[in-house]
Length: 141
Image (cartoon, rainbow, N blue to C red; front, side, top):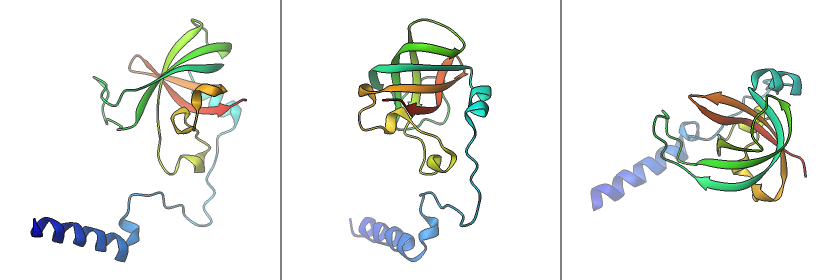
């Protein structure tokens, strides 16, 4: 047990002495982080719609999806209005909690909202390997 404690102390000391080794976002001072316009988001999305999340389910282990993200969710959306594309009135979309740096690029996640089921959303969605993934989600109300 002592070697394990010594290893844990050494790792903690490394991050304290060399904080640049930590895994958090490190914005570069003076760098202009470009946030895509609504038009650019619209162009990169396969679907754009407004809707309300009616169900949220954690799905960390999905077959056939490389790079498993530990905080992955499936949201069932009740589509209110299609802006790009079309489909059913309900649609399952996948989202993660993202990364620390997402806000620098104007990326919002349903999964990061305190109560994603209580609001309507404007969603930009991209199809990847047969599933719809949230590019970004903007709260409407």
